[in-house]
Length: 454
Figure 1 (cartoon, rainbow, N blue to C red):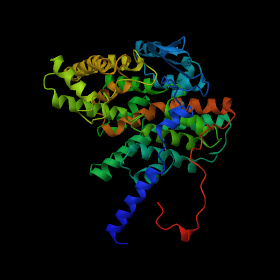
Figure 2: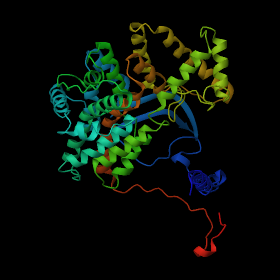
Figure 3: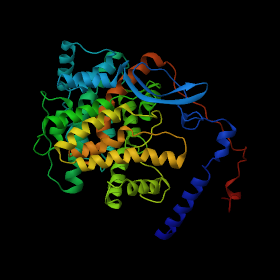
């Protein structure tokens, strides 16, 4: 076939594949299918139990979901109490949070010091790993590079398939320690090989926290301020865990339930997190805000901003999706505690970076977005979620857009690790939901008789 014929043929095959894989929406209702493992009211179908993270945004009263202020707890500890605790003592909190998630208790001073030392010692990637697994195959997307790096760790692990808890803990702590370098070096490789920038592969320092170490790895001069490191550390803590039902963590449970190796389970979670409906949402927020700034010249005029938000919801502006990105959540209704905490830090950072005007715009979009959404959609209540402010915070930290979702992974590997251990210890059965077959029976047709069949 000529090139033009191949293109036509492929277009026909694509249409056939799409048409023959489409299931009519009414069938889902007919068979009472919980699409996306969601109940009709939007709540998640209960498929498991967890003692790691608690996400709470509504209460069920006589079958009706009543919105309440959002709550997030790690191992029973409210996220605000946890963050207030280490911030009041002028400490970084991610390492303490990882310990809490993995072991189910807050560490003593001695336990925390030993754990910090262990993570620092395990930061170094295996010999020649950076050259062979990262630099020799640079990727345009850092999440794909991270997934490949995780899977490659299998080849460097002599006990890769050992499912004993001591071995799983070793593997998980190594991944928690190594994710920052895998991400940073993957980013540097992309900048060098795809964009012609200078290649910076900085040596890691054992005396730095996870947040400090990552900032030093992605910056040519390795420099960062205290508030920058504190802000990134807070973001890591807030993204470290979010219950067993979020897509990437549920992926860890599903894949781990097959008794596969740690690297396969975590690699699958990275692939899940990459999706724009999950970890990539803050990109859309940044693009939307840039669009708003380009069309609403005077955000002080609430009427102008409100009218433009109305156009976005009506699919008349921005990307015509009808979504105010960063607003709304599957569980949280009145508030997302992570967004509240990150917003408080963003206010401090915006003042230092002299970007208070942009911060004001975010505030206005959050406030007016709720109003417009309620006016347009009726009684549904929404709130700003953590993605609404995270992209702006990373931008103020001068962290490139390419690294926003990978930072999410650097944080969430702590929660994924805890959930993998929980599944191996308490799961016991392979996760296998049911799918109902809905086509009528068909007959096999000999090849010679299939002419002109579609």
